[in-house]
Image (tube, rainbow, N blue to C red):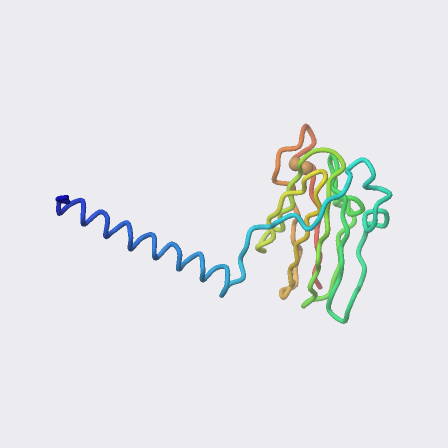
Length: 159
Ligand code: CUA
């Protein structure tokens, strides 16, 4: 079989790009620790309010610099952290956020961090972040969830 020189060139370029792509993915997964958020578990959305840990949502300190935040996403707020009640933590704290939704799909994005997850009814979403810099971090719902979607936000205050 005869292969046209241009075709050989394109095959070579494709192979190089594919290789670079795989290296980039490998580097981001193993060196930078970036991965797709996978469901942490499953929960019946109708029983969410009576299923641990969602029966007792809120912020808890679990170690010297570690906190757990259990949050229920529902139209149109992050319970129990409405915009007027920020999540307050000291600088350097690592917070593990555990979320689920009682109704529709919501988003959970913390500005100026790598936290960007979906909150899906029936699934438990878990993400962690270490807040090394003081300031106010806006948490926004970035999945359209109805008429009040733009009002669905919360805050992390790091001081
Ligand atoms: Cu919740 Cu948009």
